[in-house]
Length: 311
Image (cartoon, rainbow, N blue to C red):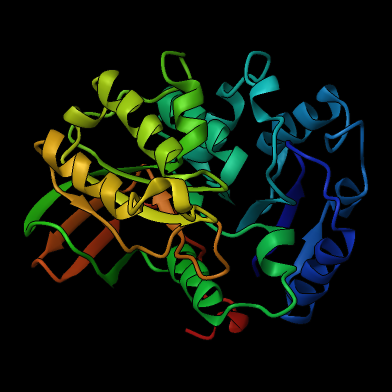
């Protein structure tokens, strides 16, 4: 039976009610939730001292159970403080033998990219305890897509998107845009050629989204990909000063400057409604000009489908 193992490598969970609501929701669904003590741990803005949060990560390689889903309590900031001292080798070795299903997003992207860069280790960009499972109401779309990704060796996402028709295949990778930009030029950034890059963010004005994407372009990262998919950009509203400049303007500029397809509209990111993506898996992307399909395969899955999955 699948079980949840909590970690808290980033920010302190200020909304404690949401975290404990997430625990109750998962337990009521029939899942065991381990390591709950990390929820209340705090040091300044962080979920504990650096050595405590680093210990959460290093201890993962020693987990002996099967069908373990590793889930951060929340994101925020704190992961990059740990990457210099984090030794990924034991966890990478464990993942080759009996993989944990490691799922999270936001600040967690930095660790996910570190594991992908060092060991081609596949993790899942998807919901976390407080913000998603601890929401006042669990989003059915998010719940269903979470379990789909963790139980089906091959699955397909479909959504409406603008952009030119295309048919490409490659490694699916990415996550939070700000975190990707923050590790560009470091050993933690994967060197992916011919990939399908998927990005999202929260609380970033459209011009900041554009600036970060242009930085990835200047770093010759975007040109090496086969496609770019823009997910959710929560709270990225334009204002009067923008005079019509918007996220759509950003996408239009990218299509002018890049020689790869730029797709939009995927429900992926900090919204309550989000898909779960296996980062490092193989993706086959098709777009007919109106609808996009992304077929994913090659990722680890649970040995059986939990009854709570509802699939």
